[in-house]
Length: 201
Image (tube, rainbow, N blue to C red):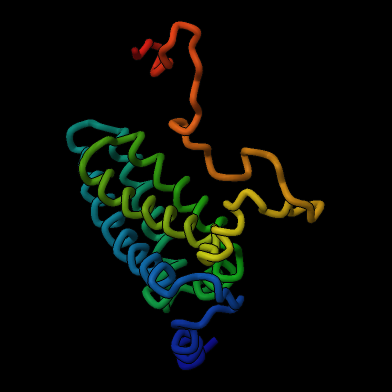
């Protein structure tokens, strides 16, 4: 693949999903990508900083720093493949990741963000891997889909809500809103009413 073909492929990608996902708000889609790019950059930077721990004889921080650098490169390769234009197959990996469901990316980011923090707990690990973890949480929220309309939520909360399986009104109290505990009046033989386990006269 020539340089011109790679550049044309990268220019066609921004803002364009291979799989149409109309139910994702634009601020989550671009926000997740932006946090991922910034988080990947800081993970690489702070991973290098954690690798300096070998000078003090801290092997855990060296291994954690290497894992943090690798996690940063993985996130940058998926979120911003234009940063790796001269490395073969990065564009294809990014396209395959874009075709996968959002929960796959969320699980990947949350899992790769944990080992560096466990191995070397410090501000560098927490900040760099924390941004990668936040990116995973944003993609997890994107995988949940669009929130229902106000009318749909009100219809599901009403006592006459239809059961989704049988199409008959549901009488299960778990499918409706919780009853008001103050509306239940408890009678007492002593002439008072019970409130919070005590008698009120």
